[in-house]
Length: 199
Image (tube, rainbow, N blue to C red; front, side, top):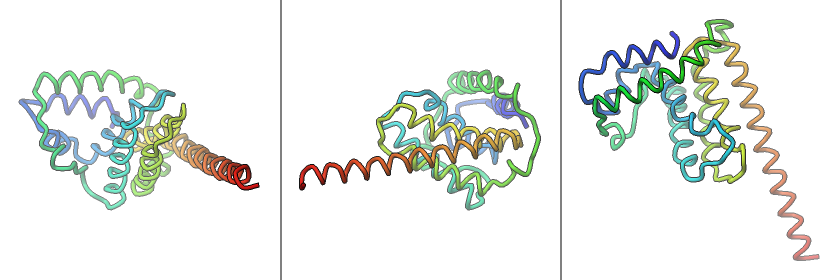
C-alpha cells in the first residue's frame, strides 16, 4: 500500500486526542516503516545534527531490532508511548507527512518484490544504520550517509518496491565503506601522532 494511503487512512481514524502508543498501535505493522521514515527525514540533508543523531540513531536501531525479532507492531518506551497529541496536532502532523510522502509515491510501485520482502534483513540493516548514525561524528554528510539507506529500505518495505530496496542496499554498502575509511584514517592518524611524539 502506498505511504500516502497509509497516512490518509490513519488521519481518517483520528477521532480524539491520542497517545503516541495508541497512534503506533493503529499504524499496526506498517508502523515500522512509517516511523523509520519520519525519524530519518531530519537527516536527509548534509549538515550533521549533533546530539539528535545519537538519540534518534539508537531509536532507529531499536525499531530494526524489533523487526528482526518478528514483532507484529512497533513498541515505544513507556515514557514516549504515554505522550498525548491533540486532534489538531495529529491532523497537522499526519497531513504534512501525507503531502510530503505523496512525492515518493510518484516514483515507487510494487516491483522486484523478493528484494523488498525480507523484513528481518531490513531490520538488521536498520540496526546497522541506526548505530552508525548514533556515532558522534561532526562531519558533513555523515548523518545523511547513514539515514538515506534506512529511509530507502523503509520506503521499499512499505511499497514492496525492490528497485528502491536495491538502492537502499547500495547505500548500506556506501555507509560501511565510509565508516571503514574513517576508521583507517583514524588509525593512521593515531600512528602518525605516536611516531611524532616518540620518534
